[in-house]
Amino acid sequence: MDYSRIIEDLQQASLFDLYRLQVAISQQLESPQRIREIKNRLKPGQAITYFDSTENRLIKAQVIKLKRTRLLVENEHDQERWNIPFYYVNLDSVDTDITLSSKTGLDKSQLKVSDKVGFRDRQNNDVYGKVIRLNRKTATILADDQTKWRVGYKWLYLVLEGEQGYPKLIEGEVIDSEQYV
Image 1 (cartoon, rainbow, N blue to C red):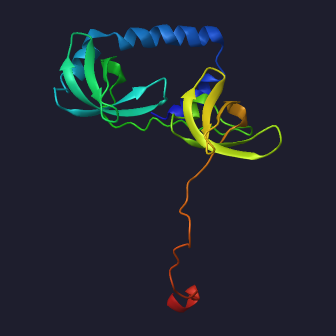
Image 2 (image 1 turned 90 degrees about the vertical axis):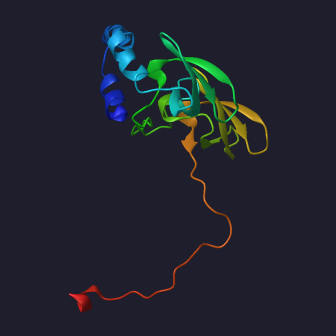
Image 3 (image 1 turned 180 degrees about the vertical axis):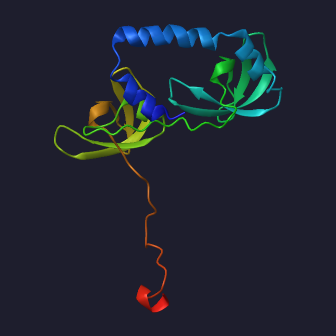
C-alpha cells in the first residue's frame, strides 16, 4: 500500500469520514480470522519488526509468547518486553515511511524517533539535532549541543548525514558519447 497517497487522500476527508473509516478499520483489526492468520505465521523465538505509533517507526523484536489476542515480544535494542496486538507486526516487510509533498516543514507522520532534523531558532541560527519524542503538535529535539527543544513540525526539515573529510573521487575522463555509437 502506498501510505503517502492514502494520507494525501485522507486530508480531503471530513472528520466524520475519518471517524467512519476508523470504526471500519477497528472492526477489521479485531477480526478473529485475521488475527488467526497472523498467529499462524508466528512462533516463539522468531525475529520480527512491529510498528510503534509513539515513535512512528519499526522496532526490531523477538517473539516470546503467543497469547489469545496479543503477542509478548522483547525489543532488540533495549531488551524491554511488550504485550502488543498482533496487528502491530510487520510480517511482510512493508515500507512504513510516509512522505508528503509540503511547501512548509514536515508532518508528524513523516518523522520517526531518532531522525536527524534541523530548524531555525528565533535568532535565525540553524540548529541540528535528533528527534527524541513525537508530541501532538511538536517534536522534542535533542540538539547537538545537548539542549532540548520543542519545535512545531512545520518548522522542521530532515537532515541527511554525510561523511566528513575528503570526498571519495573516482579518476576518469569525460568521453564523447558519439564516439561509441
